[in-house]
Image 1 (spheres, chains in turn red, yellow):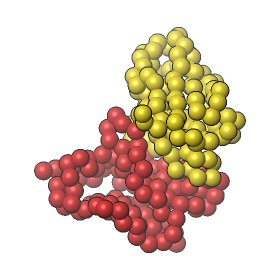
Image 2: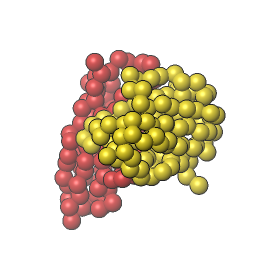
Image 3: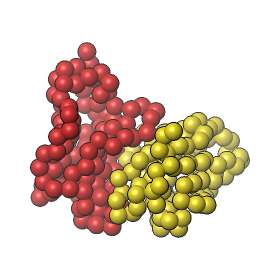
Length: 109
Length: 113
């Protein structure tokens, strides 16, 4: 089968750094997305990785290791508005998006 | 106007009712999707349309019936639903199937009573 694993929930402090991990087992790989979803709202695109390494975009960075089937999303200088669910999704060999259940991130003052 | 618009935002329906969810995208995309999102579960892909042709049906019960009259509009017709069908229904679009970066609508929060 195909599956994406990420922690169900994480808690971090405002101003700190948090890393959200994602491991995947899929039939082929054509890229990995991270989405942010605030409660009651649509998921919004954060990042896309297709090659190994780190992609940095402001306070958010995403890392990929294809050989390990592993990615992480790194959030720096956390703000209260970063409280949301973070969804990892992998594009398999059939160009289907396989989704994780999401990680709910709680930011405390 | 946002890229992908869904109506209604909230819907409460009885098990004997018939209702429809509407999705409209203004991005010029060729692929459109219906997803079901239940609490603490991965997004479940229900239907995929590419250039108005259905390309995937993931064993979705027949009480859910999609319709894609043109590349900008997608409907999900609902009838004789069950309480376990209560969920957030998300519409998404992408440039095409080979570029599946999805742009989502705000979703319809459906409650079946």
